[in-house]
Image (cartoon, rainbow, N blue to C red; front, side, top):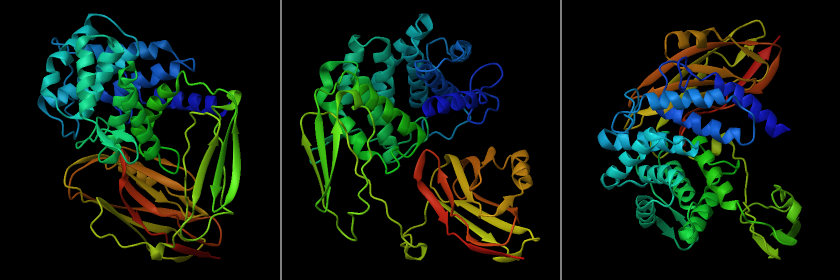
Amino acid sequence: MKALEYINVGYQRLLTFEVPGGGFDWYGKPPANLVISAYGLLEFTDMAKVYEIDPRVIDRTRDWLLKLQRPDGSWEMPQRTVYSWTGLQGDFVVTAYVAWSLAEAGIKGPAVERAMEWLRRNLDEVKDPYPLALAANALAAYDPKDDRTSMLLRTLDGKKTEDRENRTVFWKQEGSTAFYARGDYASIETTALAAYAMMRTPDYANTVNGALAYLVKMKDARGTWGSTSATILSLKALLRGMLGQEQKGVAKVVFRVNGQARVVTITPDQADVLQLVDFKDASRKGDNEVEVEVEGETAAMYQLVGRWYVPWADLPAEEKVPPLSIQVKYDATTISKDELLKANVRMNYNGAAPTFMVLVDLGIPPGFVVDESSFKKMVENKTIERYSMTQRQISLYFGAMRPGQEVAFQYALQPKYPIKAKTPKSVAYEYYSPDRRGESAPVEIEVRE
């Protein structure tokens, strides 16, 4: 019931990002964005398998995408971007992504065939694994038995990196992805895409197993892969990898931490249920010894997660300037409950190249109400694309930023009652590469009568 509720709320919210006339945009503002519209088509296609949606949404998005197709079968890289992809490489990434979304949605016809033929003609001009993995998904979804599809999968297999010690396989992507991911997040997206395409044929079982092991290894402590796109693609690959695997009989998994044991029993009717085992009482300061022992047969995956807290004062100083830095300073730390508290924010982007989708999460101290007028004015002045608020934080969407850009602004908070509390930390980060971030330390605020 909770899952269905999330899907329903998500579906209704997604519809608010559709642009009049067709297509979707990052912020729901015209003109529609080509890549995000193809992403939306993939999203609604997946959603339709488990939830009833309006088929006209898919039809409108399909028609809008096909309307922008060029006579040669390709789509042009949008001008309103900060992508490093240019020329043929840029058009190849966009065409592969759109063609994949159409093929995955089961859409056939001359327009889609022209797109596939354009990809086949230009495969030899592309060397990076990410665009090749996109093209592999497009061609494999359209016709997995085509000779050029088979050739592309062999080429992609030859570009993998094998970590024999960890028995994992991954594809290292040096540049950004269609969703601006870089570093490990770009490699996660590329690996998930490559594995997803290869699972359409039985010829790459060992490579796929190694890729899935890599994805499991890269999952973070929250159970995600950092960015939205990396998480969704990883889940798509893992879910497809588990198709056809059945739990046969009963398996027992014994976990031991520092000699203390817990037993998890896996039965055929409960094999897909997540089970959590907490060893907080068995853990200790310093090294902890963990053992996992299996009795019986199972294909279940497991993850070990450790959480700990470090006082802010004990955090190590950065050895270099972070890609994003943020400072939040308050005009006072002790006020009366009838006074306004002013917060002054300064954010700097220190990256060497333009970036996209920078977010700032501003922590709201307990017992305060935020005056939204400053943020409404920032939207009107196009300083930010949009903002959202919860009881604990304000999220500001800055969109693209250029190297050396600085943003400074002020907002007000009204105390509701006397209190002494610390503000949550404030964070600036790149949405699709969340490890590129800067933080501002919490501040203790006292409100007196």
